[in-house]
Image 1 (spheres, one colour):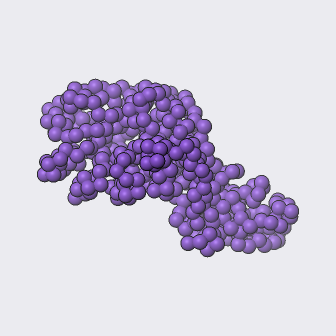
Image 2: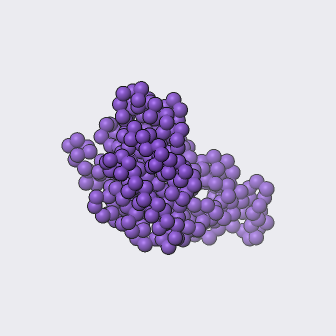
Image 3: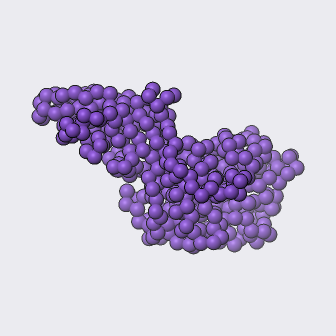
Length: 390
């Protein structure tokens, strides 16, 4: 795919990515480590490129969701970094973890029992992590299984080589939510008890980006930022309520090519279903992107773009590969050289799009499609010589 063959250009600023990681790391107190979550192809931005940039500036631990993501990352980064697989081993994939030096996060008794069986047969106590559910009720050992492992079935824990114990905050983006302290208390109790059972101290991890913006009590040994690295804050109804803020920079710019500009007469309708009608004469710009590119149809009549410094609303329904904008208020001087519309970037943030769409920035970013021409920009400064081998 060449730049002139596609309808839109997606620019990903790796310099901003590494800046954001450093900014988040600066919030931490020693000895807490700042890892990076690069699951879902680094939230849609390219896990191999993003992780390579972060590795070069000193990030030594990465979290992915699936084993295939971990394998690709290991092949790219080599043997040095720790790679944790959050969903753990699906049945029959245990050998792949051992072959590629990946650390599975065990979430339930089925995975734990299968892992004990695999490591016993392999004759090697390959490292693993444990995820305890402390209130999310989504993934991880529930309270009943936690008590079994920490009491009656301690031998199962002792059969493991546990290098990480983790949980996840359900309401970390709202600093005053009482559930944060409840989960912190539960996780601290797990930490104290499991160290006694194992006879050694693995690393502990409770916080993703949201927890990092609370206070140091939530840091433990490893933090797991995701959204912050990609330039946006976790949110609650689009209103972040956190104790700390990092100097985060936008990472993504998306610009769509203008395919056609046409005059519109008063009364003229636009798009499928004729959902928009011009009440006076105006102008329409048709841009080369649509819902097949991850530009959500729910933005029809609600979203907007920028043509230069001029805000242009979306009119009519977004179709599979085309979106129409009302450019009636853009002066002729600006139209003379117009060839693209900013969809995301200097004037429009992920949160802006999310608000118009009625969703969250995570969904907007991960929905970005693969049909754009992608270019990686931005200088990755101050390379870490240990990681680059220099």
